[in-house]
Each structure stands twice: as structure tokens, then as C-alpha cells.
Length: 104
Image 1 (cartoon, rainbow, N blue to C red):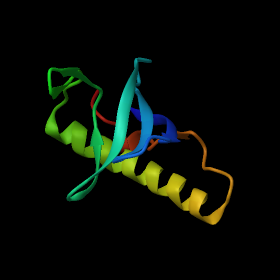
Image 2 (cartoon, helix red, strand yellow):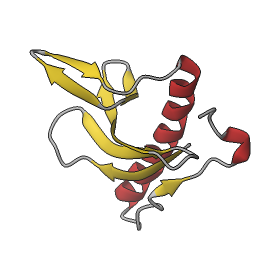
Image 3 (cartoon, rainbow, N blue to C red):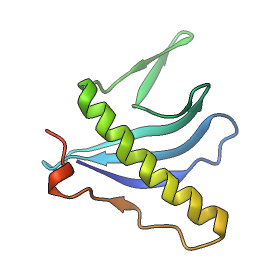
């Protein structure tokens, strides 16, 4: 699995970036977000709103979510550092290599 197409958010509020996840089988899941919460940055999976509540449309085991969060926050950090220094943004894809691949 890898994080692709990390783009900074242009929206006001707590959404810092949007990204996609591509599995080894070729599935691309859109709609992941890097969010800034009261305890710091976190990854929010794609969701839908029903009434006043949001419900995740993608669920995953805890260990997969933890690994995905680590990959996405590394990618976001590189993007934010490049923007702050005025450099060219980092490549749009992050591939952790075989030793870091997630189990789906």
C-alpha cells in the first residue's frame, strides 16, 4: 500500500491535506485527509455525512490504520517543509518499500 497524490488543503479549518491510497492489487481509495485535531495531526478515512454525524466509508484493522497514519504523516511533513521553505514540493507518491508494505 502507498500514499499517493498528497495535496495541501485550500479550505479553511482543520483539514490540512487530501490524499489517495493505492493497494498492491491496484485499488485506489480516494478521500483520505490529514486533519489537525486537539491532540495533533491524524488521518481521517473517507466518510459521508448523515444528519450531523460523519461515518467512515472505509474501515481497516488498527495495525493497518496505524501504519497508514505513519506513512501519510511522513508524506505530509515533507510537503509542509517544502512549502515552508519555498522549495519544489516532494514527489506525489510515497512508496515505503517491501519491508513496510501493509497486509492488503
